[in-house]
Image 1: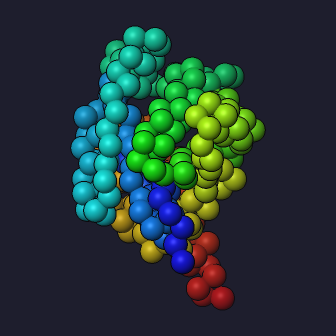
Image 2 (image 1 turned 60 degrees about the horizontal axis):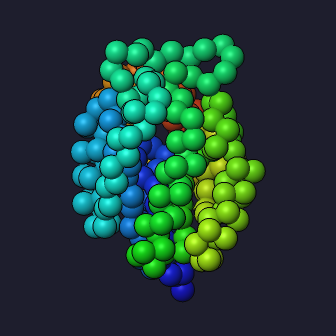
Length: 221
Ligand SMILES: [Zn+2]
């Protein structure tokens, strides 16, 4: 029997869309929440809305544009280039972003009667975001439960998966083609396989190629 109600922190990208399918398999009712914070590309929001509509998922969009006031960074300001620095977080970093998103998601979750909050954060491809680490998520879970006197459970199905394993999970959920063709990960705002050049596209592509090669290998043997 499927468990109660869940809300998925949802961007329309590969990871959170995989989480959406993961949640739909487990929970009786699934809703999604997307944070609007001056993303570089409106396509990202359109993509999230399209996916939610196609999957008949109730979609909440929350305005978090104040993030742009707090931190000038590459995801929210067009004039700042995305770069990967050898040490420290990439220029896409917004301090405390995940802390804020999960906290707002929890307030919404309680309102709609959802105990389970699903997020696609991942420690494996750790890119310097301290609030994506497992220890942080566990700590915040305790804090949220105390702050609202409510038994939230934050679920992180991708926490220990690399990109290859995330594709494998999508495949197990019967969603490989869906995730591959309908999600947007690319920093240049191009859905599906994207521009192929930006760091997000390269990471996504490497994972997909590795997964498809491994799958082919195991089918032949
Ligand atoms: Zn790209």
